[in-house]
Image (tube, rainbow, N blue to C red; front, side, top):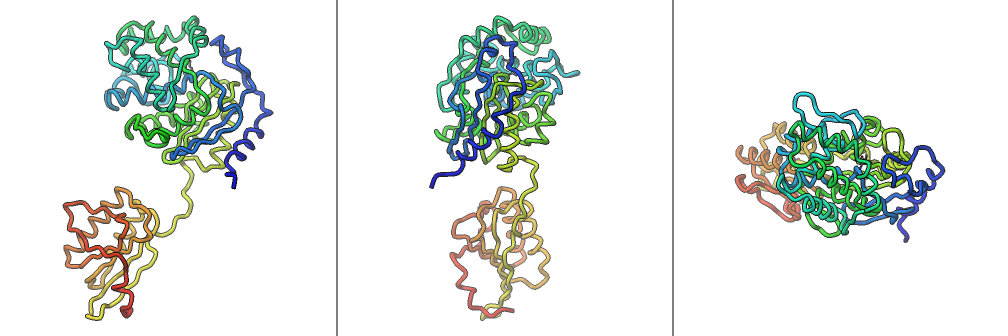
Length: 427
Ligand SMILES: NC(=O)CC[C@H](N)C(=O)O
């Protein structure tokens, strides 16, 4: 059997291949020289399966997509609180290269606009780090996300640096307000090199999958950043990743994403997939026109919108039986199923709490439960502790050990199967 995923990706590429609206970014002269018809998509799951279509191995510069990853590296190095003191997390509603700081705090509004990204670059390695060493830390960090040594497109770098008046103005503003230390020219140079790192659509999908996988690179198994760092990065991507088109993006695509002026878009949905698109023509916000069309399709077809209503889920309680043992004890057997989270655990606890019979034995059959998350585990363990305290004997049928009972709670009895109770007469 040939998996249908590549055919699907080919199909969505051909459905938007005819679109030619938008324009190449030309404020970086070298970017105006690329082939505008390039088109690619790549999807990488959190278990490392990668699917590509179109020009997925064509190289282009990462540009603003680097901001999400350098933010991750800064958070990892300094901790979330320290970074949030320096760079805000509010969507700016302004173009990415606006000269603006948050009223009151004087911080850049967020790390996805240039003011925040320049500040973020400067945080890597601390204030005394040599600028070349700082860039090398950034390059190595991004390479770890991609599982490939990334290098710089020197022509794009020189081309942007020669014309970097706007970013120099922003860096000088940051220096004058004491947001960055050191020479603003070094920060602009390092940041511009960071934006000139060369990637392919395939690389971006791998980098995205590392975010979707909680900071662990799916192919290497290497932890690149911690889970709390990833949560912070994805949250800021969700609210600020598409600049002044963030609201439109949220409603139509609804997954955390970051775009760059060379035409890439990277998106990540926690626990599921990382994805990337590449098409160089941009809309007025600086986002790839066909990239947005592709992301809308992917979101709709693959159910990636984080606000989608969950599919109708089964009740956590699959069966509820009462029996009396031969020696006369009343037993209630609750058979549970599925993935137990807060609402499932609440249902189970309510069923037990509302039991007005003189319950002497409670059997929880967990063989059809696939997982119990942390909150549901704590709730059920506490419920069981309480019924045990009231003198009820609790038995778990949990051969796979899905319920982890905290050490300080009385350990319930565990049996492998229900045979002991199966032949008993029903009440
Ligand atoms: N939106 C972008 O991709 C902008 C990145 C570009 N290097 C800049 O700083 O202007």
